[in-house]
Amino acid sequence: MIELKTPAEIDKMRVTGAFVAEILAEVGDMAKVGVNLMDLEHHARRRVEERGAQSCYWDYSPSFGEGPFRNVICLSVNDAVLHGLPHDYALRDGDVLTADFAVSIDGWVADAARTVIVGSEKEEDRRLVRSTEEALRAAIDVAKPGNRLGDISAAIEAVATDYGYPVNTEFGGHGLGRTMHEGPHVSNRGKPGRGMKLQPGLTIAIEPWFARTTARIVTDPDGWTLRSADGSTTAHSEHTVAITSDGPRILTLP
Image 1 (cartoon, helix red, strand yellow):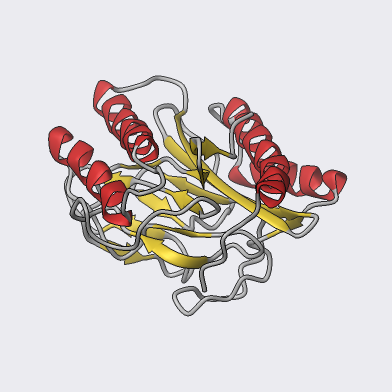
Image 2: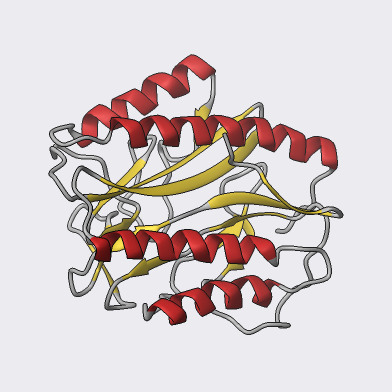
């Protein structure tokens, strides 16, 4: 179902989005060599409880996961890219960490993801992270009334192509608002001018993610963590965006 939001409802999602951005910034700052992923998970749990928010992940049981998910943040390291299950792992120098976080506050959801490099940075990893950030900006730039969903997807794919990265179409962005997953699906690959027309009030999570040398993914034995099929490093950037008459409004900024 696709539900268009009023300006007042978008303002409420912005409140949630600011909190999501705050937590991702805190987790990014905490991601140092030797820090355990469970320390990051427990920090996020404390902050969710203090804020009176509700995790969109806790007890989440979709068809593609080994539910229920019993954590409040997804933490994916190196070749892991999506739905990373927090576990007993101490971050190492050069690890590429993606944190993906979604909560509801007063009934309104926001969702975002950020990839950081722990300690020493390799240029090839910095390039990969930068590509997802550039793809996200390019997609947001065309998220305007009158454009089509395919324009967003094509913008992401164009950046991936420029960088030489393949694009997976199994998992992408999505609508959200009262729940974490609503229509429409926002693919990371598409054709300009195709798909539904973007209207004011549409709220979507745009989330380009790339693996360096493959578009194929495999699932860990934990039933959740998705990894590149060839073990190549991955990165993921995501914002919640509202389509407004004035253009795109990013709801998950600090």
